[in-house]
Length: 229
Ligand code: ADP
Ligand code: ADP
Image 1 (tube, rainbow, N blue to C red):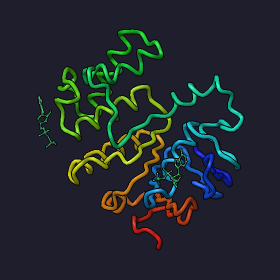
Image 2 (image 1 turned 90 degrees about the vertical axis):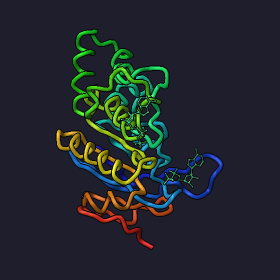
Image 3 (image 1 turned 180 degrees about the vertical axis):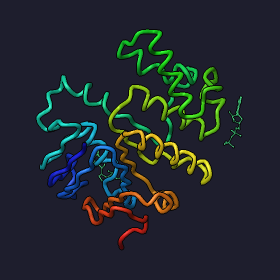
């Protein structure tokens, strides 16, 4: 589903690569954590998958596409296959929970009745069926992240990227959120999650890719957090 083949990324006006000869492949339906200290290249890796950045060398393949060769006009279709969740939720503050989730579908022009049904099902899946009329500031942090997850999966993407999704949450809430991501993964979505959350990585025992100064220094099938030093 996601394949990195000797991928390096050097940002303009920098000398040290943000990613340095990274090769890894994540199969359809897998759940993988990306760990590493700050600045190790985790966000760069996620941005390459979205084609928000382009590799300096090597090949990135996502959902059957060669991203270096992907015409600009095909980038929106790529991004529709990828849901994204962030540490800071990024909800639209003046829109209700329902409208935050519906927005993505309205943008791509779904029928009103289909949108209502799909939003309802998705809110139920994340456990927010009773909070659809709230505004984001009327929710706890964990609830806001559930809205963001609902928004990310409402059009059934094949890949879910999560960049520190539990970074602003307390440990108990973080566990709820990771269980939700696990449930989404078990329904077939490939999940790639960058994190500093050692408790969660150790509780899940899923695949762990570790970056250190841009290099892939570890790829464990059922890994723990402990950073290689
Ligand atoms: P992480 O997500 O693990 O903290 P990043 O991928 O954000 O790591 O950063 C990896 C390296 O690339 C760091 O040295 C960072 O300073 C650098 N970097 C990230 N984005 C840019 C950018 N837009 N321009 C220049 N350097 C960048
Ligand atoms: P947390 O301790 O996780 O931050 P809060 O104390 O913020 O949670 O919220 C606890 C409950 O109160 C949540 O179910 C949330 O939906 C509700 N709530 C919080 N703020 C408001 C508000 N301004 N209006 C209505 N309900 C709220």
